[in-house]
Length: 129
Image (cartoon, rainbow, N blue to C red; front, side, top):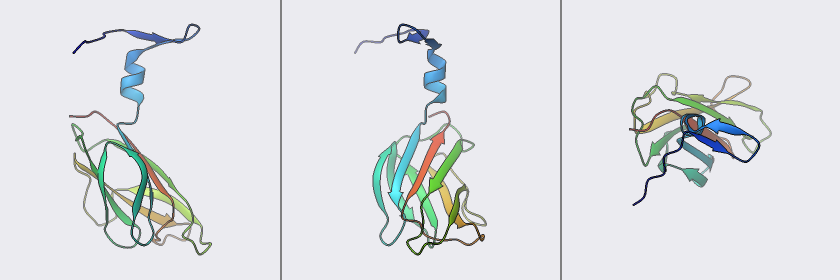
């Protein structure tokens, strides 16, 4: 196997340090249907999804993170009934905390209620183990 070591990446007009690419890239992400039997549409570094109840989901990673204090961002679509979905929250309230191998997310409506969503997406940033 060959190893390529470079300090900058350039497209010919813009050059950036490789640390921006390696440190700034999502180390895991997933897009899935969070209603009924949940189903992944596409992902990176996600081995499985678990439905933990209404609007509560666990994302399991193929490759673990070095610590459980990674950053998770997400978005979601409607719940199929026209209810407005506000956000995807990391760490389920009063539920299991994130670990190096799993992230827990919850979908919450603008009214503060848990609600399954037909589109749930999460992007996880941090250092892999």
